[in-house]
Amino acid sequence: MIAVVESIRPLAALACPLVCGLLILIFRNKPNFREGCTLVAASIQFSIIISLAPIILQNKLITTHLLTITPGIDLGFQVDAFGLVFAITSSFLWILVSIYSIGYMRALNEHAQTRFYFYFALAIFSAISIAMSKNLITFYFFYEALTFSTYWLVAHHEDKEAFEGAKKYLAYLLISGWFLFAAVVMTYALTGTTDFIKGGILTANTASKSTLIILFILFALGSMKAAWMPFHSWLPSAMVAPTPVSSLLHAVAVVKAGVFGFVRIVCYVFGIDLFQALGLGLILGIFASFTMLVGSFFAIAEDNLKRRLAYSTISQLSYILFGIALLSPFGIKGAMIHIPFHAFMKITLFLCAGAIMVISGKKQISQLSGIGKKMPITMVAFAIGAIGMCGIPPVAGFISKWFLCLGTIQAGAYIFLCVILVSSILDVIYFFPIIQKAFFKTPEQEAFTMETQNPLYLFMIVPLAITAIFSIIFCFFPNTFYILDLVNLASNNLFP
Image (cartoon, rainbow, N blue to C red; front, side, top):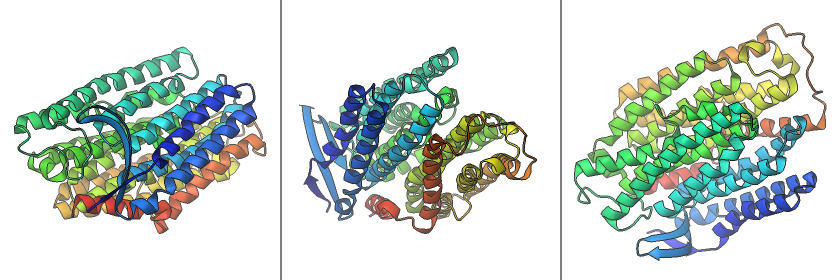
């Protein structure tokens, strides 16, 4: 029996980015105070969120009720093991990305820095609210808030390319939101509730099979933030944004909210048993496999470093959908644990790409010959992230892919085991040439645009080094930040 604990700590955690946003506006003409408020707020939020883990690991739920609109429709927050994994990941990475942003934004003398930090704080507020949502109503509200709070981050440069990328970003995600809203309304009409419940709120007797399948299609179309194909093209287009924003989109908030929501819907709205009875696991597995493989082929063909990383994200996100589609304990664990592990590895790669661009001015992979000798720390960190993406030890990606492979065997889906192995080979094909070019090709004799000893460079190199180190630590100690214990608890509650 899961005990329920009332607490204001979830609200305290959510208040941090809101208060931070207000202080950013107040100190808009004092950059040091402005960025200082961001770092303090991020640190306090992470401290509050990590303090919830010992309570959750006692098999308890932490709830905070906000508002009842009508019976079955209310706004509120609920922290469980799975949500806490996402919240811990996002809040910790907010600290590191904020440090990185100081070096990046000031080194490039970017305009509208106050707006950047303000909307970044709002995006983190929305992401943590999604992680702690008690029901579909609360989830939907903040899911859409995340879309709007990130628009100006994508359009930050305010040139034609930026506005076109942001317009495409907004068009995809707003249309997706309409489908999600329809799915939420339909769920409430069928069940009279929208609460997330282990085992799901839908049953085979709730509606006909065809109705339930239509409902799942609506939810799937409402999850375009997960960037599954063919609804993926908004993500590479959004790479016009500054690198800290790309990191936010790929590792901390937006796409992670998409796959997090997908797991919520399958496990806590439909439930494992009903999802299996409807035969939806196979369909989801096929779409996930297609995205994993085709996304990798797009990455292989891409010369722009950030866009190659974007297509890699599209492929890697589908590992999470893939694990859920297996409907096996190991598959679910692999999907859940890939959320934080992928976040640390992918944010490392994007931070490295940003550092390369700021220091050397290079954006194309074909221009990176010998750059490992000029930027050794950055490129070693990049190599660590890339190796992890390929599922090679001693980096965290090995752990999540190990669980996913075990999940395919547990489910008896050996064809899917072949898919994940082929996908991992494709990861090697598009990542290893970058490493080979960086370390084993003759360096180009071009001067860098700024000295690597510049303090602003340290603001960038320290965070990317930390995320790279954590990517290795998670391989040997996967329970860092309670991650493995929380994933085991969440999975065990789904498979009692």
